[in-house]
Picture (cartoon, rainbow, N blue to C red):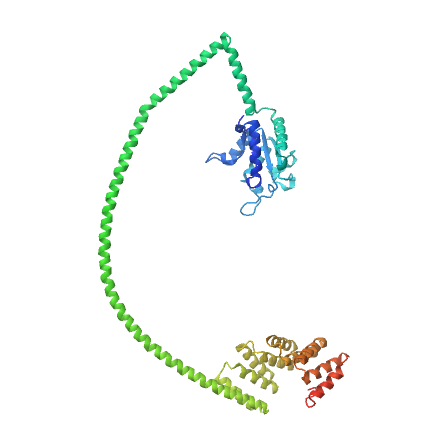
Length: 473
């Protein structure tokens, strides 16, 4: 019976052990009685039907299970056993459906899968008694498997050794027949049969000889026709090539004439373009120089107005300072310092909304303008918006960690929100950065007194000592 033993395995899981099992079983049962790989499926055949037929022709199906057999994945990450076109699952399901002897063979330390881990069609596999084949005890385990196979097959399949025994027995029987009349007749009859077979073969060869000669002549004619066709094609190709070369030469001459004319025209156009470019460049240079001169003049006038505004601030003439800063900003709308200083003046005049607008624009022009953040924070604090004030002071400190007034201002905002601990921490940093800051000493002393913390009186005394005139302002 062909394909008596079917070896089912997954290549990426146990191809090495499956190959060794195949070789060992072939020694005992014969290679022709084994079916192992889908590579033997004929082209164009429905593989599901073919595999089912192969399984149906077998007495025993070995299912080789390695450690990755259960959870092997395809290219999309799906489990192969759940694929309806998976060869391994198709073969096992066909065997189980026909109630063929299925023997699980556990290799490389694999375990038997549980029913809940298998597709519905393979769940009966979990109830089949398994055989373990270990790499370190392969010979011993393989012999045990062979014994199980003999039991399953009922010794129906014979291997090469058994056929050799039968062959020897046949020779012995032939010798015995030659010793009596019956044997001599059988032997002579055998020789006659061989002669007839040889005569039939010779007649078949002679019968086919004329047909072979005809086939040879046909092949010669086809070869000659092919050679003639190739020669004609070569001649036509050479003629076509000559015509092509003549056309190419004519086209090259035409192109050369056109190129010379185009080159002369191009040179004339380039000369005119260079002249126009030189004129344009000179115009642009003059315009740039004029613009730079005008920008420089405005910048100098803006700087002068800015310095006059600062002088007016120092003298306490805030209206004059605002007018000077206005002029500086008119001359240079991107003058962030002028906008920041005008915002400080508006804050001194209690025009907090106008101050905030100036600080906003100054910060837009210069996002790293720490003084503008501090000034806007002061304006928000004076309006009672302590959260925005704290945010601006924090940004000013980030931009300039040594800006002591920003720490003192933020401390005051925290104090007004009732966060005395955070306020005192900011006053501490302001005093560390500027040990002569009477305002920060005064504020810290006042905060300590409010929460009954020691050192409040000492801080106020120190503030008075540093600046009696500006004591606790």
